Length: 391
Image (tube, rainbow, N blue to C red; front, side, top):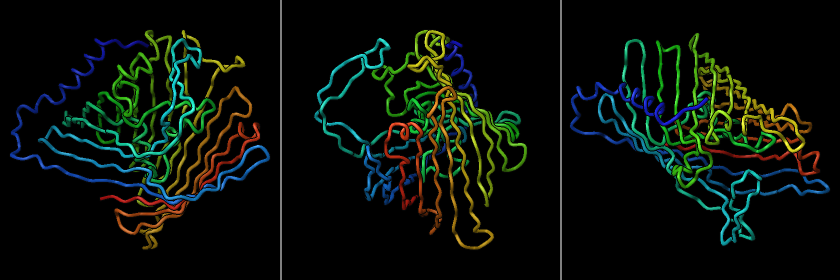
């Protein structure tokens, strides 16, 4: 599977044809700008038990997890634009000596930080910055985006579950579940995508991306991989509220994308209504080098799977009380390795004070067979009081 610059150029030019009729539209006198924001904050306590060889953390602290600030404007009936700033706290290493060394033996040198001091700071990132063209052609509603845009899968899962303010979906959190700690997708990236809604029952999204993620948008400076990332999602809605989806992501990791690549394939089922939101997604990852599937150090082929499921119950229309219940379960495993299962369990009860203010008491744990085998503190347990504020 190989895509070159010509094929990408043809793809983008075809997408631009969607907006061709814009030149026949009259320009509005003004372009009103909409400003909104969202904040996630919590009070949490780590309650992991200690073992003979590893101490569990007993820490209670306040935290602002995320702040999103968004500007939107509609230029005319076809074109619109969006810019979103993302403020997040990150653990960074300060005043550290560095060395360049080939840590993983792949022939490229990585920066290794030595004897630095770790600290947490709030950093400002550009999450989205794109122009969108939207038009209707026959029975199809078509949207084209270009710039720093959302990717087809992660945002869709968050929309189905409505739990992003409580916890990342587990594809987005795969590094904490998969045995090799890999992350196979980004929530936003530099690229272009087309979104086609056909008679409101079939939705197809396809995009071409740098593959570096929204925090490494300069591909020339952060050349993690040489190839581009190609993503697609197909969702069928056979009846109102039921969503059946297929997912695919392919990223070239070398000059020959057919021989050097990684990504995933997956499928999902979701139900979304005013009373109940529930779903499950399954993913199988792949990694190839020189045309061969990657191996563990013991010679076994990597064969990793990831499962993400959720449940949200909002009985307010029946009870009249704005109380809701949320739960999530996930699993990561390599089918060829023993002691490779990591599970995630989360559950909580919440209250919606206002359509823009809601809170939840939430318990979660990561349970790792590998940590048990190594004698580390396990499971990793945390209790939260979380809140989401929109304005």
